[in-house]
Each structure stands twice: as structure tokens, then as C-alpha cells.
Amino acid sequence: MKPQRPTFLSVLCVLTFIGSGCSALSMALVGAMRPMLRGMFESGAFESYYSMAPTLETQLETMLAVPGFYYLLMFLFYAASVVGAAMMWKLNRIGFHIYTIAQCVVFIAGMWLGNTGFSWTGLVWMILWVGAYAMNFKYMKPAEAGETSDRA
Image 1 (cartoon, helix red, strand yellow):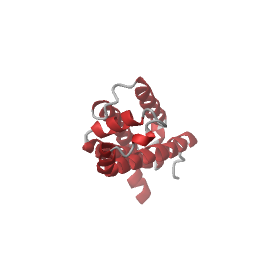
Image 2 (cartoon, helix red, strand yellow; image 1 turned 135 degrees about the horizontal axis):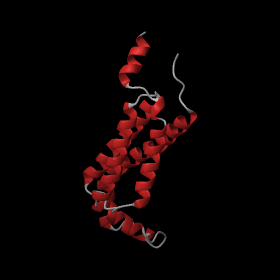
Image 3 (cartoon, one colour; image 1 turned 120 degrees about the vertical axis):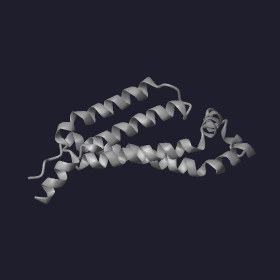
Image 4 (spheres, helix red, strand yellow; image 1 turned 90 degrees about the vertical axis):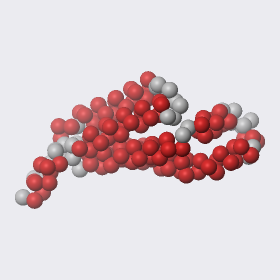
């Protein structure tokens, strides 16, 4: 008999697929488009938009000041969050550990490399999500147990 995945865990996983999946995609796109954006910024191509979006110039400056490898790092760890959620979807415990480590790296890398500084809000959200997954940890099985029960 295959264990049933709780509805709450399913909802968490789907929301993670959406949130971390979109974040991974955006980090990949920004990282890939960064050289083009830098050229456009330096040539003044965005100046006509500054009056419509007063913070655009500051946001572009901040984005371009971040080291280029930051976007690759964030892409990899957001993707790892999706992989962790997919493993938890299959009730595999290792997914919880992958997800938790990935979220911690995303939080710390954002502070130190992303020039965002410490964020209480970010910390609280990370703790809430990891805690919500931890509440479902008892339904997850170690990888070895899942593999041996499938063979029997």
C-alpha cells in the first residue's frame, strides 16, 4: 500500500513549483540578459522611462552592481528548491533537506551578494515555509525505505 500525500503538503509543493520555478526562470533570464541591459543602461536607452518609474534607475544600478555569478547561483538554488519540492511530492525525505539548504543559501546569498541586506521579512517567510514542510516530515520516508518497498 502506497502512503497518501497530505493535501497541505501537495499545496506547499505546488506553490513552491510556481514560486521557486518562476524565480529560477527570472534569475536565468536576468543573468543571460545582463550584458545587454548594462549596454542599454550605459547608453541611456532607459532615460525616457525614469519619469514614469522613478525607482527604475536605482533598481537597474543595483541589479547591475551585483556580481554576474550571483544570478547563476540563485538560479541553481531556486532550481534545487523545485527539485526538493518534487522529491517531497514523492514523499522522499531527502527533498526536505535539499529544499531547506537551498532556501538558506538563497537567503544568505541575497544578503551578501545581492546587496539586499538583512531582511526580517525574508527570514520569517523562509522559517514559515521550512516549518510548514517540517510539519509534513513525518509523512515522508527515507530514500532507502521507498526504494526497497517499491521492489517488494
